[in-house]
Length: 518
Image 1 (cartoon, rainbow, N blue to C red):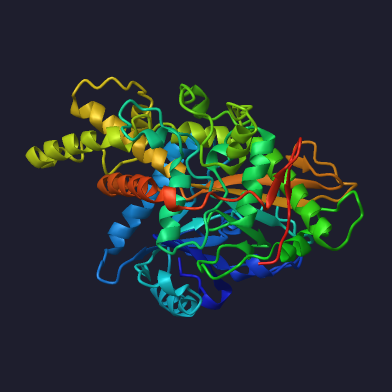
Image 2 (image 1 turned 90 degrees about the vertical axis):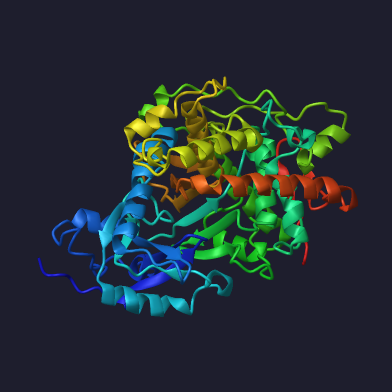
């Protein structure tokens, strides 16, 4: 079959992380007309497969340092490992409705060279130390800033809120030696180190344990804290374009009033206010209400994850002592922050359960890593047998179900715990994508998920991305970073000002934002 012509001008830079870059089809991002020009894809997908073409909205490319030259075959295998891990492992833990693993496609080399040059000027400067791979392969994925449960609605806007929730529990492992780790979550301690290094200007009031509590007041507080200091943990898109959140620039200060301006036509408030601080506050409260309801909504998929034994919720604290919300509770004489618990089918519950595969903490995991390394020094030919580099198939998934923490001294036990830890770390670093589109009053969607706000209803879909398995070789780095975060906090926390709660006031049922000029 003769290759279809691919035009780099039809594709735009969408964003990138440390290991990959996303390129979106420009007409899918910008064009809201009812008739759109059909995009061209690779001949390997097939010219007649229109259904797949419609779903192929973004291309994901790997990134490498300039001196690291991988062959096209190595890139292809790397991408297939990512695909297989999402399909056979994370989809089983998180649910088929939430995980979109995509497919690996081959692209014309001339197209890739021109595309790489085209997007280079749009990349953040500090991301340019790594280069986009142009060996010929990419992952073809649905654009998760769009609704995934309903055909593309071209005549109305679609908002997408990307939340990176981070780790939602405090370790209670017997191997955890630092007492502070049993009182404060990793995210809150890490904030002190990041601020000291200049990555962020101030400590965020967001605490993952508040979001994962299932208690609506704590969840409202957590989401409002993310809106105030989004860092790289919250982004908001409108029709696929970033309108709010971190843009990889610490000097960028998000404007809540501008965000409210975008949301105002769709989050009508009952008081009828159309401008001013009170209007902005009410609109953001409506947004937070919708997000909370969506995060707590349950999925009806019958994926095999239902057969996985639930991991008991940590017997440690259900709150973090660094949380501004919980500090207020303690000051008011309450001995324990309230937690309602998460509905078992909701995305936060499934994410938390996967995170809790880290049952030993990195302090208990690191000696097992050294045990495996010693074994591989003696028997290097056994590495493939241990499945440290895949394949990530059903057999790999089955071995993750062994939840015993009784160490029998075997290599098999060590490898199982290491693989569980790698999956848990993947879940700790994933992003939740919530796409919302307002419905028209007379529309009826009995079989479609709908969330109701005060005066508007929204079609919605929930998806998860950033689900690449964390590398086995990164375990020493994770151990050293954990030590660095804890030691820095213990050394410097006494000299730090306690995070103020002056911007947020707690009410009986919800959190209220007090806006101020920065």
